[in-house]
Image (cartoon, rainbow, N blue to C red; front, side, top):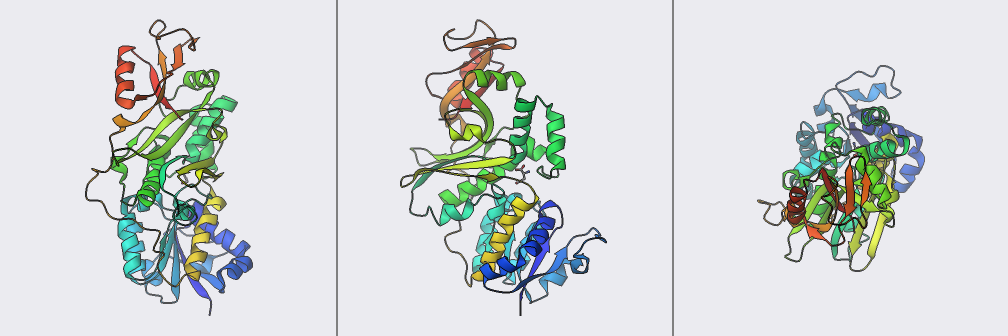
Length: 397
Ligand code: HSE
């Protein structure tokens, strides 16, 4: 008898899961070591022309109460009703694979515990970095390392917009509309533009690497809506590109510091060349020094690839993956304030306010420069006030 799968949601990712599954069914089954089929697709909408039309249901209980279904792919997005559905599936011993970063960032600790209690799995490779394998490498391949820092471009939509604005002079709104039409953006693209999506992803990475649940509300998050073209152009003259960087580092006092901020990335840093919808994640560990993971960070089939990789793993596994877990956190005292973030800084200030003309770039919208020395965020804010700065951003190491 074949393993029966249910797919929750038939939007961009859910429909991609069905498409890729049937395209590669034979090799997927070979890799899983079992025959497999999709038995249900849950969606409230009608899809009369779909090749899978006989599989649709609007009733979640059809899936929950069908003991044949042992593996569920959750591609609905949002916390509710996804949380209720996923938790109920896990409580029935059905493993769940999800692309839903909001769900993992808000409720990951609860769902991991529920999976463990019912000897099944809650997998979420697709929730961070789209197609890029990063969750499993972090707790498996790199398990021998003391990882003290992870930094990445974790949102495809904003990276796509920044690339189009800079390379093609495309206005912000046009670039966003294009990203939406390509299926990259969230339902509410504010989550992309204001950094909330990247925040959820760095929360998931932080929780997994440092072992305690990091909630989005504890993370300093700034998106790209304030970025001016003049800053992108000035950054280029100063030898950098502007990227939305989500990072987490462990400080000497043992606290961790996760942030999401537009950041200047020097051209000698490999991350500066990551363009369009591509994401990249740099992991720093005592054994590996650095390792970079790179690939398509959003889109139908890239994300479906990660979901199905997890589904195949759920079919192969007979027990809960013990290394992929973290503890709940009752407070955020283990998280440092963003004011402790230390780096060199980019400033754009009115002409005459720059500390020196050497290394400064004078242009129509002010004078841009990068500090030689590192300062804390708190110091950078004081400096910005003193110089009446129009803009300031950190510079990546
Ligand atoms: N909106 C997200 C992005 C989708 O642009 O990266 C993938 O998580």
